[in-house]
Length: 170
Image (cartoon, helix red, strand yellow):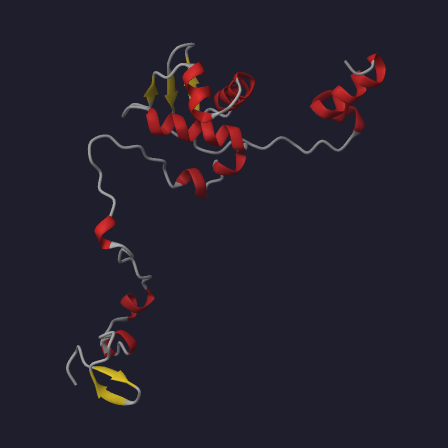
């Protein structure tokens, strides 16, 4: 049997799909090849190529838990800054342009920016951003708020509810 022969409906010959028998029965392949996951492009005419500048995120960002520590707004801002930064992680976008492009409010931008600074993922000098190399470990998520006194002190919704109870709704 030739390598491009196929078995179709129990007979030897060419099928309409030209599916090679070797693709079904790989007796000649090594164990290592059998264990490998297919990595051929699904659309070979659309394989990505690096042309000019490009952005990257280390796999460690996902594998080591950094991704999990970010809120949705923090993720949006972080990935935006990664995309627009130069090879040193520097970007020059002003807050108003960032808010416009990301469709977020200035308040949400400030909260996300400050959280990324606190998590040691970005630096900001008032004008420029720098996406930093990842710290050794992701930031620890805060301990869960379980006691009423902690909820009143740290949970914004509980704090606002208590203010409204005492002073009334605005």
